[in-house]
Image (cartoon, rainbow, N blue to C red):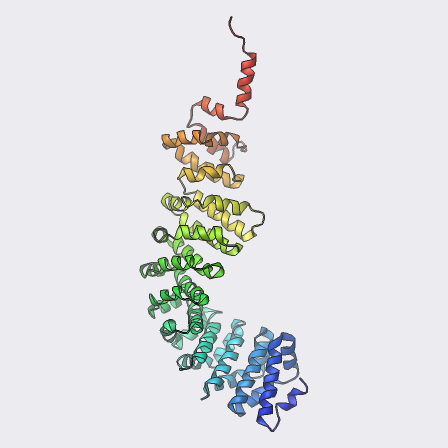
Length: 466
């Protein structure tokens, strides 16, 4: 590095550029080398030349700044401290698209780290010029500018508002149908980062008429386009029932369910969460997810996926669908998802988050579920903290349903209940008493543990009358 630094001031322009490029590649390699560029006092020299030199050198210098700034907030701060932002913003107005692109890239990498650095990029006046860059004809420049706007928007509602005020949303929305997949990824990402912060910002996206256009991206051949489109829909749906309803009306729920069915792994995650958010808002919206066949699709994710965090999201979404009314709970229970939730909850390999989510989902669904055939298998496997909810549901239904009472005896449910050891005076014991009161005393005795031994003893001790 000490040998490269003087070459930045060489009289031959190509040597200057090659030296800058070499420094950029070194800095890009890891943070130690980037640190060395900062310590070697090379940045002020680059910033000075960035304003003075030809377009080839500008590109190379901006590349070095980006390579240094990408590693950590501290290194990005070093670039800000040496006054690079103003010069980079001036480069956004350069006539050469390559220079604009290199500058936008560097600015995006600086803004990416945190709100303070992002604010510094905004204060330097980058946003309106980045919005102009997304309108340029060059695809590469559009991509990088959209990516930089996404990086600026993500930290806070105020920063996202700055991007909106510069008129970004209308231009981004127009590019959702652009044939270039990499551009679509960045556009959808930027719109998501804006929409996630507040109802107002989400509504701005909707008003730019991104529906139903954005739904076509869920069928895209590019996995990241699918994922980012689902993320955008999720970020809008989560805010209010009205926004969720609007997505339902546009056919968004059915489209997301199809998308989940056609992909695997992390690409599914935003779609799964979107269904949970929609269902959480109200009974009607949860019913919309059920009618669009969301429940079987979520239970497939629960069984198929390898990653715990995806399973946890699916469990959470199923809990949000099933927690409203007995009808909702039944729609979830009939897909045979309760035993799967239970085994994931009891599985020692499951992550803590997955155990918490499956337990909560089970509780949400069980407290509403009156569909006894789905509850019965759980009686035999559930631990005490889940068992009380299951027995509780039987104690609500059996007193009013003679057919269910008979079935409960023949299927072995009553016998199982007699084997449960409950604390005297506990809620579980109350539920068991309620169930036992639905049956004649001799039936309850017959199914109690130890009854057959007592009978045999009576046979032995019985003296026949001769």
